[in-house]
Image 1 (cartoon, rainbow over the protein chains, first blue to last red):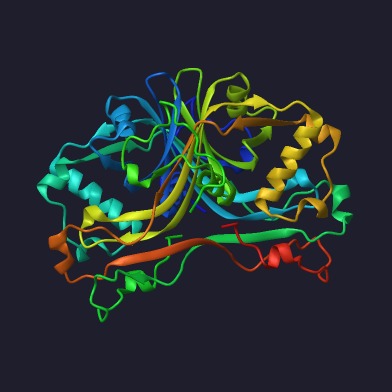
Image 2: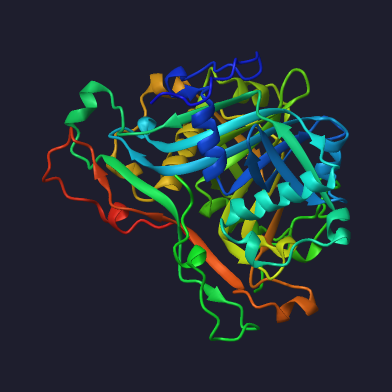
Length: 223
Length: 223
């Protein structure tokens, strides 16, 4: 696969040190994981130097990732004051059943994005970022709902993190066992897992006859 | 629901500050999320005070969570030197489609566990911890595979984190819209999502006739 965008030059922080065969600085790989992952885990350091990891919704637009939250959130406050952050997005693809306990693993794809974030204050960019977050959750939805009011926008903090210190890690395929262990009489292989939609649950406060939009009935994460 | 175990007395770090209605310090709620979540996101602070968030496998046994990794891993090295950690486990339960953009949300359950971890050096506890990790991935598997050798145990670092500073957050149910917005003519409701197994992929290096164990064919996360 030829990357559509140049790979990112790794900084010291993000350089892959272990299991190099699973690592990538390729923007195409990184962007695909950021886009497919429904949520991110955002790490910040608190006043006492302790790490705090919060699940959060995100959206990528070009070369930045947008985050949002209540203007009163303490995690976002730490970011707005310019503290360093690590945003990690992980996708689980399957269980790897080896013949020995220690070679069991999980097939996964993950991105770690390091950097500092900047508050988005321009009202137009803020609105575009929130549109991106809604469209990240469920593409096609933004046009079908009431847009944010000025008051709602004021109560919401939006931050952007540039994608310039990022790496991806991918584990895929069958187990890799010690050669002697291939003789062991146990089932070995991969059990793929995927985040899948179940039957939609209409809000009881909605008229029953309202049709289900195709972006709900045909929902799947981009891949 | 009556909790089988007493709720944990919240420390300052872990006290729920926002959206209190979604928070819990109940050990039964916390344990269920730790057990169902296949992976955790482990946050540590590096030498420069920057947060690093890594996806990792974990397993709960009673009042501790075990983590493991290569003895050479830099994330585990930070933990072994006694640095503070935040382990977060998040489950995605569904998309919440509201009538206004800003009330869109995700139904989720998450746990944040704060603390310092201790290396597990006792060989028997180390083995029990690794058994717990394999059984966390796929219950029933440990008895079917080759146990770790002494060399494998030496090359693997195992750490334990006590569950004494933890909180859970849960968002469930239908969207909560502004009263005026309930008149908007758009589909509203929840699209449930679940991490589900697809068709198993047998390792081509295994004899084709080997039967599929029921712990693979009937796999589901505990709930």
